[in-house]
Figure 1 (cartoon, rainbow, N blue to C red):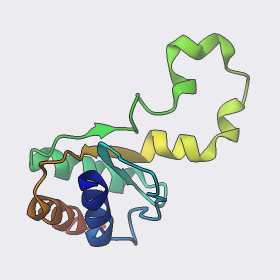
Figure 2 (tube, rainbow, N blue to C red):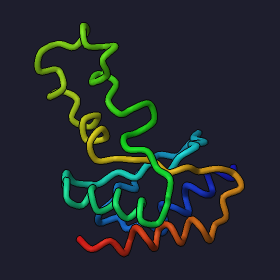
Figure 3 (tube, one colour):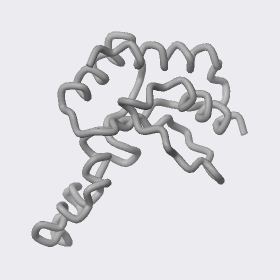
Figure 4 (spheres, one colour):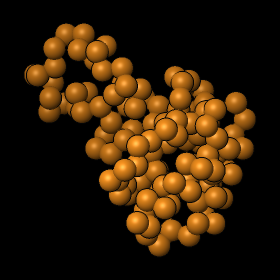
Amino acid sequence: KIRNRNHKLFLKHLRNDIFFNNFNLKGSSNYGFNLILKNKNKNIFKKVVNTLKVHSIEHRIGSAGGGNQIRQPYLKKYKKKNYLKKLQNTEHMHFYSLYIGNYPDLDKNKIIKLCNILNAIKI
């Protein structure tokens, strides 16, 4: 319940012109805030990552598990030619997403502060 409340607060305060925030949270209890750019933009993504680093906000690039699993070496022999082109959403997540920890003791003021930091990024 606490993680869900945190996630809703995060999405409520995060800019929706830059970041995807249309998540179906029903039945979810995510340990991380998925931060996904709405549009492909390497420059904005670099700014997001650099901003998090400057503010010492721990994060991981890609979604949990290293992003698009089809790109991982252990699946190389199963990957068909041009298969990645069919996985547009997965590829977008691989290159334009990251996640930030969402733990039950996370203070709501820290979530709002995080959103303010992200919302202040100049695009």
